[in-house]
Length: 134
Length: 288
Image (cartoon, rainbow over all chains, first blue to last red; front, side, top):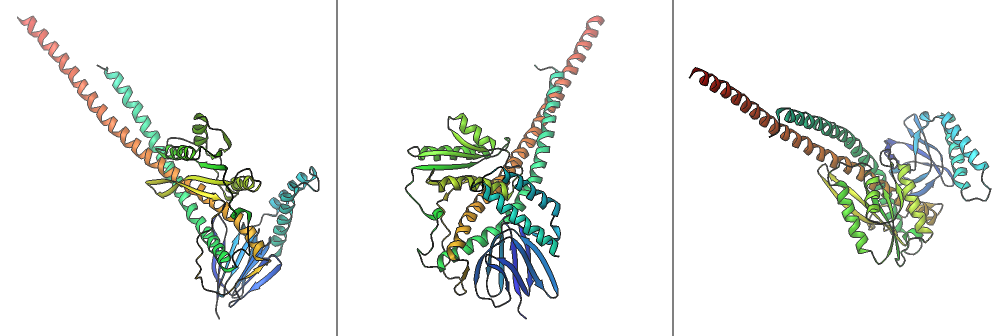
């Protein structure tokens, strides 16, 4: 069976470069799966789990957002940040959420400065979910 | 003539200097290797991003998508971002940059230019020349990460978007090789995408949610990546320049020690000869 060339890159480094059978990525409008022969597709990523299936093995990553470009035989994930699910530090993520919540308390609901904190909380909650998934 | 003790002192001090420059060279060599790795590691992302962007801009109908960061307007005010180093003793590294910066400022004297610097040396130099440095990011380079580059990029991007400036230029030392660093000046905003490689194979892309939404995320990211790439290059170039400068300094110190030692030995021998002659001639005088 044809394989997919899968690449996961972040601005700082290339995280993954493998051949896989299937990729499940968190798109802007929900999770979507890609198998070889997929139509060309370019999507934004939301924070969430990225699964790379190869043979009987699943590899799980957390991506914080970015883009994914899909061709017939390749998937390129341009993540703002990404890490393997097994490396997720739940305590650190919880602390970031707590810090952001404290910062939010000092701001009005409509304050534009509150938005980054809300995004951070959403992202870190997703990170925790992915961390708990494996 | 300097006394023997003075020369000995001098030799000792030059030896110390040589040890320091040698150590600095080693440190820079190690940091250079790390910096080079980072430059190489950042390339796949930048290249893929470029490819995706040119694909998007070439596949969709012209004018179907727009982005404020791609739109140019009449340039009256310029933001000028200068990347130097935090520390000196790096040969011509900082003077190359500051010379190029002065040239740029002279060329755009008719416009209103605000300055952002990364690195202490550039900020100090420009302030010393009477320029107003609006924002300086000192200490950013030593713990350079994508997040810190993003902070710089987002700050200037916001100034562009709010209309405080009409263009952003970026000046940094490009790392060409371990012995060559070349100042690189480019326009960051309005962003000019690389010429689209229109002949890329593959059919029409489907975009999710929409081409416009993808572009809106893509363009600022491309700006961030460009700044990040520039900072990485500059950091690598800094250490390459310092390594070369310290290599030279170590060699010069070695030469100096050689000359001084020769001079020291010659003086010592002259002194001994003189004393011997005095003794011999004294003895001769007594015999007579």
